Image (cartoon, chains in turn blue, brown):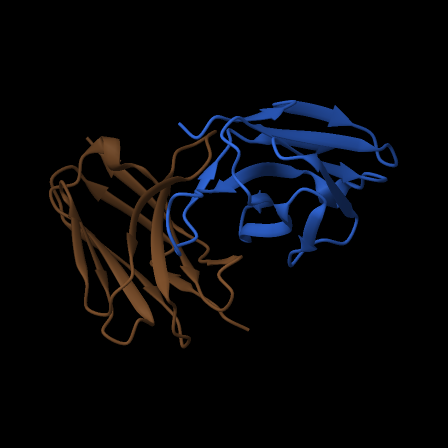
Length: 115
Length: 111
């Protein structure tokens, strides 16, 4: 258990509203990731962070922003939600003691529905 | 663009059968990982392979990394219903900050 929690676990919202998902970790890992998972597309990286206030884009970053003001929290914001952003969102951390290998541990996921 | 192709995409077998899942790429990876994901949960790391030709065993699961570090396989012996899930491979290359993910193999083991 890497001590990762995500909130909320489920959310239904309407098109055009802002939405923020939170990922919280308790073990001071440097790297944190946000993915979305959709049938037929697998896991796709949205954004990741390699330290406080250090973030970078993934392959599907359009329409999403992130912030990391402290080590334990990584926030994902949908500025104006669209139906195409209906998905399951996973947060992951990279195990800091795992050496050079990018071994990742995942949170339980947030199921987001945009109507 | 680096890609990882997994095959088969879906697999439905009876309890007790053996199976092999493949993860292939034209790119070289410094390490490759296998994850299993059950419905409603996040992926869970099973194993990391790093050396060409490496074989690792986890109970009835055998993982192999290709000699050229471009492909990997997962073999399950005497599958059980508890093996049911989505098996994902992921490779690490370059600056190692991001993983390249396969689309997964969905395995159903029927009692």
